[in-house]
Image (cartoon, rainbow, N blue to C red; front, top):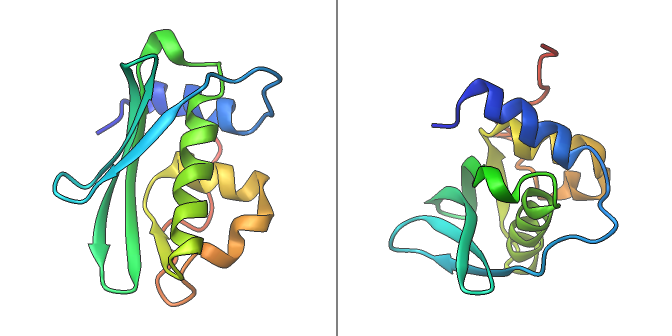
Length: 125
């Protein structure tokens, strides 16, 4: 689980747009339940998930400290939501970082499962 202070850093990161984000390669691993993000062959972070039929539960985003503030979390979340949309699937959002991203980028509201949205609002700290 992500430390609350780490969550705050990543929520701040996904709430802004980045001019020159990292060039990431993102791969989905169904066995481990992880969207794995790498840059230059080095792991940058990941987003853990659980399959639940037509929807996917988005559990937690993590980005290594040295890659924070460079748009990695934003790219990772955008990729995951685009992937789910392309599959015709919805998401239950348990991760407050993903929820913050969706609140900022409302064009992704359609990916959130209406019956099981998960976190609907992140409480201010």
